[in-house]
Amino acid sequence: MKFHNKPPVNGREVKASDVVFSLERFKAKSGFRINFEPVTKIEAVDDYTVRIHLSQPYAPLLNHLAQPSYNVILPPEAEAEYKDYNRLEAAIGTGAFMLTSYTRGVQYVFKKNPDYWRKGLPYVDEVRLEITPDYSTRIALFRVGRVHQANWWPSVEDTDYFQLQRSRPDIVLGSGIRSLVLGTIYFNTTKPPFNDQRVRQAVSLAINRQAWIDTLHYGEGCLYHGPIPCAYQSWQLPIDKYPPEKAKLLIGYDPEMARKLLAEAGYPNGFTTTLLYAAVVYGTLWDSRYQLAAENLSKVGIKAELKPQEYGLYISTTYLGKLDTAAMGPVTPYAEPDYFLYGHFYPGQTANRSSVNDPDLNPLLEQQRREMDPKKRLEIVYKIQEYLADKAYYVYLPIGTTRTAWLPQVRGMVPKVIGSYGVGKFYLYVGLAQ
Image 1 (tube, rainbow, N blue to C red):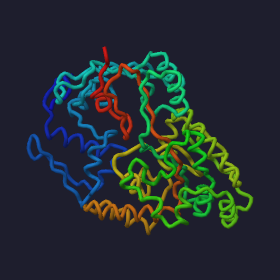
Image 2: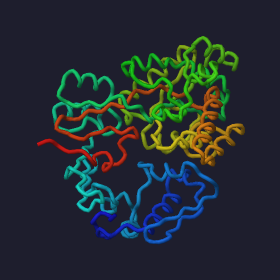
Image 3: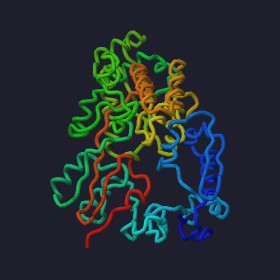
Image 4: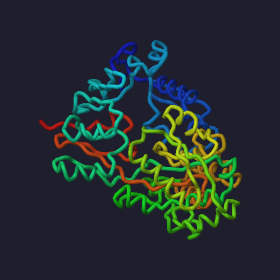
């Protein structure tokens, strides 16, 4: 396997020392370094063997190593030469495509890597990602054939999917893929009113999930979607395995019970709060979700004042749990259930947006990480989900299926459940009909 044929590496062979450098760099600098907490040492045994030392048994390690959104092998020469991997010149990897051009606000251009280790792949010579911030414009460009694929990320919204189905019967549509993207309302659980479990339960019971599925997603989607995403069916505790009272607090709709819980918590007339969210970036569908949430909450006496934030501010503060009241939005998909459990609930983790610190829960989160027997680990993961069901540290929102669309001349396109991380992985087997 070789790096891209770009200076300063000039297509040299990838060695174990490069893997050590990349993983050590990730462990020291990445915002996701929590996933490598048990790693104590990374060493090159020889040119083609890496040994990773752990402080304890760590079941999630292999999945974290395979996570496409952050684990990449980088050449140390590029960092030494350019100081910043965000520079075009420093974009050097081993993948099927090489980033050869980037025009800010316009497009990325990727060229086929002639030295890619899978001989004969990829099939296409070039991939262009056009930067079009406005979702409606992206769909319009696709509708008239200016681009081959309707949307890179997020997926095509349900309304447009069915409109395309009617107006362009020649295009190819992909649907029915369960989503790994969680939708949540999260809280500052250290301060009133959301430090009271009954208030959080009331928020959950106020959300009419089936109406969301029917209104936003044409009746298709996951009503039960958290704390483990519905795409991970093998890890999700089946909803009929929960005690009925807990299942209700997880996905049920009962405004009357919500009002009763608020009264018991000292809010017989409800209260006013702020609901933060990232403006624009997640598309018009999420705009509708914010409005629906506020509307649902108003019916039980909670006046949620929607407050949009610029994305940079949101992702660097609110998304990290730095908030006074409540917030709402999607959660990045990951290839390991541990992230949705240990990452979201263990004290001190950057993804613990609700500032959870539950002394009864923490040992279970640690145990599922250490248990190497898959069946025994699954039992612990099931136990965690049942325990969390009535705690409402996060309120999980229903989500639609992942929908995609591409022009008929595109061949070999297969939508991925993990999303569109990595041009090479997504377009490796894609070709164009003559």
